[in-house]
Length: 286
View 1 (cartoon, rainbow, N blue to C red):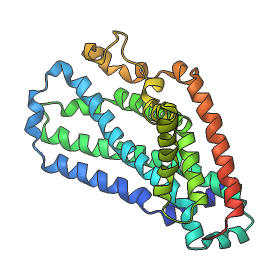
View 2 (view 1 turned 90 degrees about the vertical axis):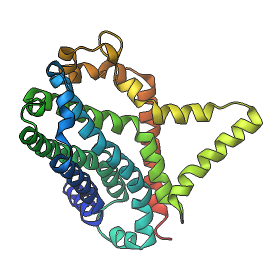
View 3 (view 1 turned 120 degrees about the vertical axis):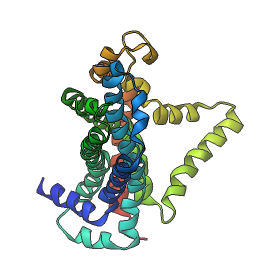
View 4 (view 1 turned 90 degrees about the horizontal axis):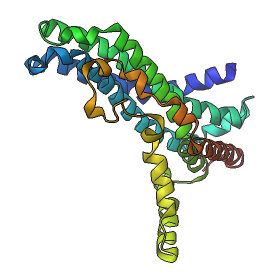
């Protein structure tokens, strides 16, 4: 367990973008709050203040999560490839650290550490921005941004998102690790070419598009499996009170863990991660 702690620290030392990118986003949002036009908030009805506060917290977190998810994908494609390219893999193989520990530590960083950094940065930023807005627009919705219950609900929502995204996108993460552990150059290109080639072969020779449906369903089907709408069936029908409590109602825990696609993807992801570990053992440098 101590090995994992040091390996994860290593990634934070070597990949400074893990904290630099959220810091840049945070700085930009704070500058907007300081010098933006606070008057645009004056048109928000008082009865919608709870909804606006919840949307503000959600959008702030979503911005950080989206950007850092894209970074996590790039990180997974580069992490094992970079070790072989600069031959630092030879140094790490000389230490009493197994390839399994190395690969799993990088997977933990991508699936959990980076999203947690994004959520932490979003929390700090939202509190600072809420403080600034409450001062600049005290008679408007500034006070609605300080709702403690809403803040706690959003934290639970983001923890749910991190866990379920890690499970749902494990096949994508495993594929990226396989590519990073195997290719000799251009891992981003090689992560796409085999899938594109398989799709074209199926399309031209069989006339079907099953591969595209599977890949598209995995990439774009997360929200449909992990979340559901309001009790009225449509987000447009929410009233202010329901919106204030929607964070709990939004999570479809039973639907996500009861979906066969979740468990099939988890099995494929575990197999791909195992394959990446085997490739790491057999390919030391470029």
